[in-house]
Image (cartoon, rainbow, N blue to C red; front, side, top):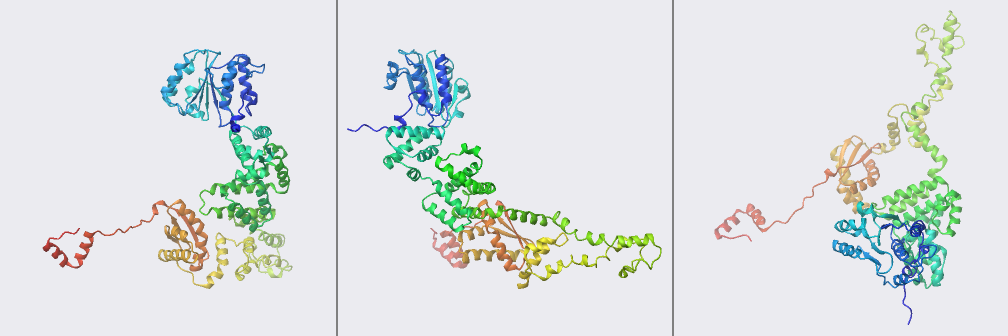
Length: 626
């Protein structure tokens, strides 16, 4: 008959302080307290699940009652007390599950047992697990005993939620905070167990298990048992990733290379392949964001210790990090973070991820120095306070500065009028206003060839309607409304195709109704059309209309369809500078009139109103309408 199978979490549960993994700061303190006989009457072990709280409580209870402890303050495992503990027959150690024994009566029963001294050994130890589950009345009944127990009684409380315990209980305990076990410690412990169990395990596979366990040793052991059974003792990286339903790091490396090559089609195909394997979109975004974080950490050798990846992958991350610019990684992290936060509210989740990947494909173009410089230049040109005042006055001072000294010198130094006009016969009429109007003669020097060259720019704008927008932006017209003039000139071709519509509330509503029909019938987007039907439209001015939405979801649809509606409206109204605003107003919800069927009495009354003879017939025969 084969030996009964025991899961690794029970079979390899630590029996001494030295075998506890990742909690050296606590085990060392407890051993020193035992060595110096400075034992507290109450301990509180708190921390995440599966990090060794109950295990350390049992080891402490076993060690302080051991008859022959080792010099390192560990239980000998050979005395009668240790043997009775191993056989679970000790009368000095009591374990209570507060999750199922949380009433006042359970605590009263415990306090009654505390009154009796141990028959064998020095201490009676009470281990109360999940102590936060006790009721408030049970806590209050436990207070006095916990504060002043007999000299032989020691209480060890364990919990995962310290904040739920009353402060009066916390003040009576010596608190030990257990931390999550580090990935390297879990990997080392799993490797030692694999050696004992004769399981062939790759270090990368064990690292994935340790990552997935999130610092919980019990979860890591359970996953290792499951995968080892699934693979028949061959725990490889590929099988571990497949069994735990985790995206392989190679997927992110390939996807990153496709994005850097600006291959939009390849990126979308990679995404489709991942989705076909059953992975959710938020898992993809989260994993890809973690991938770019690892690339950012690999930029600096000092941050290499922060990389929580298998050793085989660290080399690849360092190689990739030298190729990808730092600004691209930071911008990609920002894009992925925004996409991950907006994924939950996205209506079309696949399109949401695809748009994020498309943006990442062209992110390098947005971050190139030329594009950044051009964007800054455009921004400065379009600012009314900066772009106009800095560019437009430049040609003006040049022609004025040269001719001004010439007319000023002759009037002051010579009294004779004829010699002054000899060098410049064109300016003969100038001597007349010499005494008082010298500043008024600044315009005459403008006809010089140097000054006339700067003025032919306006004919280029008005004559060439199809001139590109950047040319118009480089030489803006003077004036407060120059942007409106530019839009008017760009839309000149649109105006030539038809007469500009004069907007009012009636034709604006008809325009919006036509757009809803266009979305429903031609674009075949019925859900969008239904959302548009919940909106209302208002006429604001001759070139401005407002769309009012009734809910947050309705507003999302409105913002998504604003540009489509704007293009549709410009073609219908021939208004090139048309503007559309989207506003949220929950009070604008339309009342839906629900028609109910009439009952028999209402049907009779309507028929009788049309034919009074029916009412007379009913009254003469004394009939009742059922």
